[in-house]
Length: 211
View (cartoon, rainbow, N blue to C red):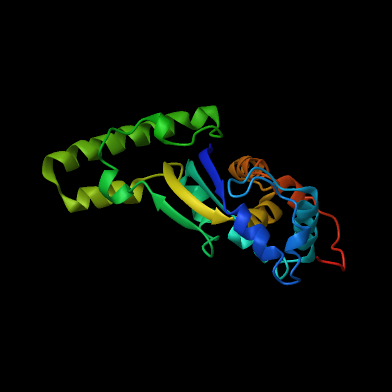
């Protein structure tokens, strides 16, 4: 299970100006709506696509477009997402401070792929966690709290507010499409819905004339 919401995109104006700096081709820019950006013009989009296809050393403009979103996903997915450290920032709900703030329920975990005959194992684990939570709230025993942390299944869902660049998103799409974990495929589909991302990803070979 993964939920992606509250998506915001920013930085297109500066990125477009910057991508035209190397060849002083600002006069060719046809994006509209300055200072309140409305959309990318055909000439600017064509250049963006060619730069994107030409490789990371040419598509530096993508590092200047930022996207922020709230992601709720299981810890086993976050463990893999943490590979993408460079250019990303995340603030998460705290397991250290808030893990025992409420009773555990089945909805706190990603269980959509558990085989039905094994669901009782999960419900038993949740019952045990709640017993430990009750004991911790009564005693404030650090050992009990540590037991909760170390028994917590990797299917536990955590929310993080993530900011990344279009370059990060581009790389994730390239590297995680068709992944064995379904959450990655859902996340990739969300990234492909970002403004103009589909056109950038599907760009065909780079042109020699990058102006």
